[in-house]
Image (cartoon, rainbow, N blue to C red):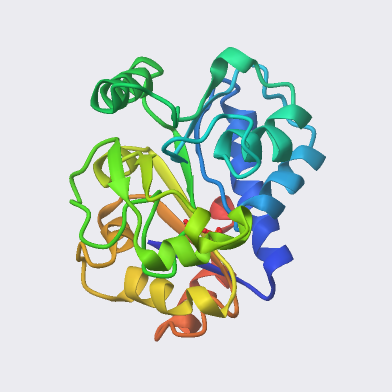
Length: 256
Ligand code: PGA
């Protein structure tokens, strides 16, 4: 796992944006896995400002709330169109976000997996991390081999996401999420985390044991996972100095 610690959030976001832009320029037909929530907001703003060519890019989002229509103000459909897709030249047919109103959820999830396969798999998956270590909406104790499916949110996640809904009691209990196994098949993974309230989950994910109690810890098994943090999110890492040293002393050909 490569850990990149920026002096602040804006610096860390720029590192992440450079990684994505480099991949996108090298491969105009990139298949991108995308995340929602407060973490990638600034990243999407940065990517928009870079004026990249999205015309041949395919995207797959991690998750969506069950029962929400795409135009619901808190839906991830709405989030993605407002914060990224509407502002770049992406082809609407190339955007995939789980449908929260799917009737037959298991069949729909199998189809979502099939469309990822048909696209050739995900080249680069962007992730956030939950305060209890989830990736996508794979809450603690999710199978590390899980595929796209319905999940029940923890009360902690419902509390964390309450502001988007105007109260925790309005946050849906169920979601459709790519599985941990689905995420692990992405060729590259880029996890972003900012702020002190993510420090514990980050430390468990990067330096703790690999355990379903912290699903993000499975990324230790991924050959090319990168974790981009600000100082606050990195504040509980035991080896932070080492990660900084590695980053500052990269050979030229590895620099961004
Ligand atoms: P956040 O959520 O970006 O809103 O903090 C991250 C996540 O749940 O993965």
